[in-house]
Amino acid sequence: MTVTAASGLVFADPGEAAGLAAFLGRLLRWEKNAAVRIQAGDGVAAVFAKPARFEVLAVRTGRLLEPVELDVTVSAGELLERIDEERETVAVPGAVTGPSWAGLLPPRGGWSEFGTVPVDAVRTVAAAAVGEFRQRADKLPEDQRTRPVLDALAEEIWSRPLGRTGLPLRAVHAAHALGFLRGEEPVSLLEAGAWKRLRTPYGSVLVRREGTAGTAGAGLSVTPV
Picture 1: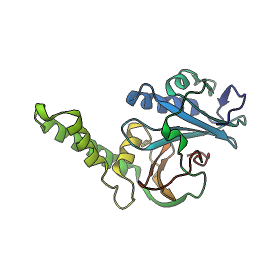
Picture 2: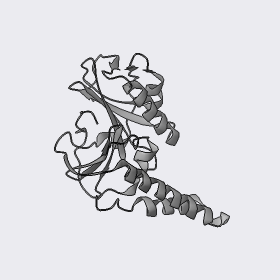
Picture 3: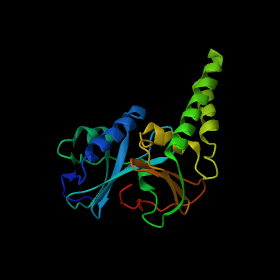
């Protein structure tokens, strides 16, 4: 872990602090004790998270006004409390013991785009899958509506592929839940080794093919999403 004496991050673009706050707020709805890993370098900061129950990684990046070298895992809740949206700054809280996922991040380079999808189409897929889950769950007899049964139903639906992209629908679900599927710009699909990535202007969702070795701590390329 590399940490400098820098006390905080100053974003270069208006709205970045508010965007980070929205990302963290959505993350904390799923897990109130969530942790995030912050990596900053080359004028860009990246905040990584693993939303509870999604089995994917999510990242939001932003350009920095002042250069900072930083690599630390912190409490998502404490980070949210230290964001100043008016000043476009965030004070970095003290480090916490990182969860296991924080030591295995996607590669820094080698990403290639293999397709784009209209964001409206992705939103439609996400809404349809969420609707199917709710409809099928509601039809279950009350004595069968247990956590294991609901988890199995969710696994069935969210493990389905997104067309021929190789991405599971859980990546789309996470992007929807984290507020990444906004605006009108197409969704970009990228891959690097065992990793696949769904990227929008508001953040990225990443999945790694099971049974493959990764590079611990390598870190995603810290370039704006």
